Length: 250
Ligand SMILES: Nc1ncnc2c1ncn2[C@@H]1O[C@H](COP(=O)(O)OP(=O)(O)OP(=O)(O)O)[C@@H](O)[C@H]1O
Image (cartoon, rainbow, N blue to C red):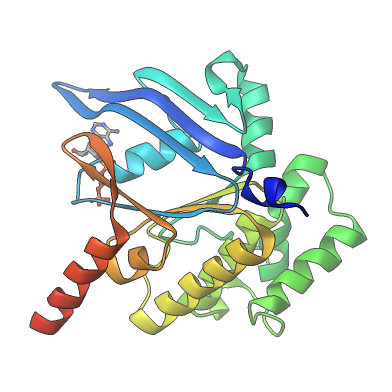
């Protein structure tokens, strides 16, 4: 590889331009006022901000689970407003993986069957190759002995690790994780985070993670903060200093 290709900026996998979101209920709630962000292949980005600031709203829009009131969302270079419902569902299934605070594994399926569901949805049936690949991923995250177990016989951390592999099964370009460690004790939370970071580094999948945990945010490549409806990039050195002083006083 020559220096030019090494320095070439990575592909933008998700971007927003002038993104606004208002919820219209009895009263209108403006949440996002005009967001321009770009996330590149292989980046690990943390989204932080106070409760109610709009983190989940932004993440849901980035994954095309919700639509903006104004502005553009480009997923893998495609302006999603130009797609039909079916095209959007196909793009989402091919390019985006999701991890939520609660694992949402299906209780009647084993760990392996749960992890294979995105393949089953896109292809109808998993091939032997798919199954072997997903078993290898489950083994990679320490679930080799759990593959035939059901969610209610696995720990919270094991279920969340299975949910992460499910998000990676279709070899997406982006994984969106909404407080993936929020329901776990700190040890399991750290394990789950480390697995996401390893998967990000090994497979070059971009991760966008909403978190309330400033220690985990500090481990990301970039930190974006939502404040008063706007997003700004947080200087990681300043964030580290604040984190250290809060740890000293706590
Ligand atoms: N479906 C909805 N209808 C109306 N208002 C909504 C809806 N969903 C979210 N909101 C409001 O939008 C704002 C942002 O919510 P959002 O869940 O995105 O915040 P958040 O930063 O993820 O919060 P938290 O950290 O508590 O999970 C909040 O004021 C919330 O009450």
